Image (cartoon, helix red, strand yellow):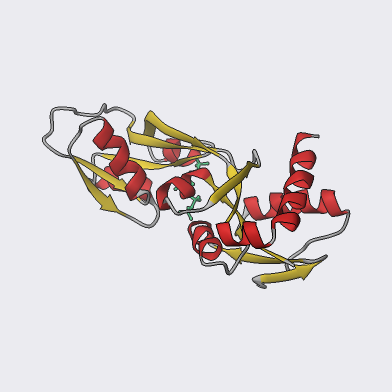
Length: 204
Ligand code: PRP
C-alpha cells in the first residue's frame, strides 16, 4: 500500500480526480476526515506547507505539493513529476502607485516564504529585513509593516483587491509528485508503476 500526502483544497481534489481517471473508481474523503483508504492507497489530507514533512519523515511514501513549497523547505526529497496543476507564481508586490525604492538602506519585506525571499534579494545584493507572516500578507504594506511583500499569486485578485501590483516574478510554480528516498527504493515498483499511470493520465 502506498500512502499519499495531499494538500487540503483544490490540489487534493484535482489529484484525486487524476486517480479516479486512472483507477476508474471514486476517491472521496468523508466530511472532516483526514485519512482515506481506498483501492490500495491511503491518502492523508494535510496543510500545504506540511506535505514535505509527512513525506520526508516517511509517514507518507509520496505526496503532492507546490514547487514553491519545495523550494521554501529545501528538503532532501525526490521530485518525480510535474503534475501541471496548482499553477501559480511567487511574486514581489507593492502598492500600485509605488515602485521599489532601491535607495533605502534596508527594504522591509513581509512574507510567509522567508527562504525564497531571502535568497532572491541576496542574489540581487539588496539588504532586506524579512518580516515573517502566516497569512493576509497583502495587508502588510497597506499599514506600513513592510515596503513590499513576497507572496503567491494565482489569479492576482487578492493583490488587485488590496491595491497592490506585481513588480517582479521570482518563480513559477505548479504541483509536483514527490517521494522520499527510502520509500522510493523500498517501493520502487509500486511508485514507478503509479508514476507511469499518472504521467499517461495527465498527458492524455
Ligand atoms: C495565497 C496568497 C494570496 C492568495 C493569492 O494564499 O497568500 O493571499 O493565495 O491568490 P490570488 O492571486 O488568486 O488572489 P492561499 O489562499 O494559498 O493561503 P495560504 O496562506 O494558506 O497558503
